Image 1: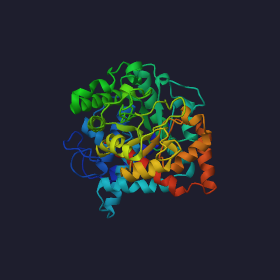
Image 2: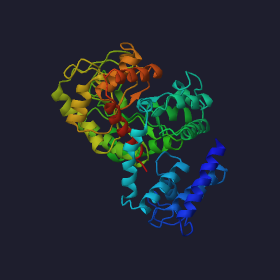
Image 3: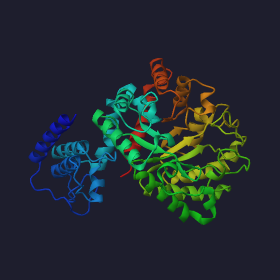
Image 4: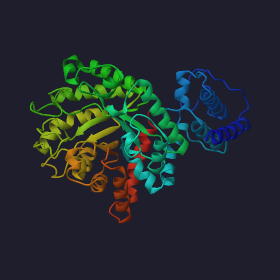
Length: 452
């Protein structure tokens, strides 16, 4: 592997040298995406600068790039500055030298469709899953990325990983596990993964519990402190998890604690008032985004009025459609407008809309979330291994139903292999079109290239 990387670097360095006509200006001010030298031109010097930095860090040397240069160099926004970034820059420069007039940002955006077209059906379907690390290794390797992880990624190049408490032992261990997994994915040519965690603050705080990051009270405790505090808390949470390599938080909770007997949401909610929840959730989304991580509004269409816990089994909201649109939807709408990249659909059933769980309902996802609220980001299921789904459907059946319903990503299925096979069979049999798969993959790739 190292020999192949070294050879590729030599080729790129040679090509870069042939294309450039002046020296590298590393350390210049005013870096934008792709413009590492800061001269407002994206060319071979930028590619060479990236490769030089990559080679230096690979040799164990301290980074020489400024923070702005690191952001400018990570053109595929996978959190790693390496030869792939240099290749993108060099390819763009070659195309502009041949007459391409697109901006660098437009060029990057135009590549999304090309990537989808080049992906196999199997790889596209795998891209729609976020799974536990041990799901790639058949239940082994909970706290380290090993050869089994690499083999699992090669066979099932999933869209992301979600870490739970049993995947965490120490800060160094988590950082190394994520970094090694990224290296495996890069070596295999995989689309960069999302690395997600549930870090809401309060009772659901994996990193605070296991890694000693900031310990917050439940978000409900801060409801009277206003949007400034909601923003600051989210910004801090983003920084806490980002230091280990996580780029996706399954937070904030956008449910309103409207039923005092609710068993599962309770003080995880920001408020028991719909408008106040909306104000605080909108501020939190801005905090997460400006802290550098993607965030997730959950659990649409609203889990705060139920009695039951969908982790264990069937959960019902008896709200009318008008009540939902006037109340529960408010916080989701505010969070969407603030720029949330993900909305998680819960496993609750709302008879006023559909008798299916919301996560498996096209009426909930396409008619309400995408239609009424106009949302066009990533829709993700709640964990499919939860009782409300796993007790009623096989892995393959619920995966097919989830895609048919309009979900872009499927979280933590009970069995990844059966889930992927089920969707592949559904496409082969004409139950799901490949265009439907492509639609979701394009949304996923768009978000993966969105944060700088």
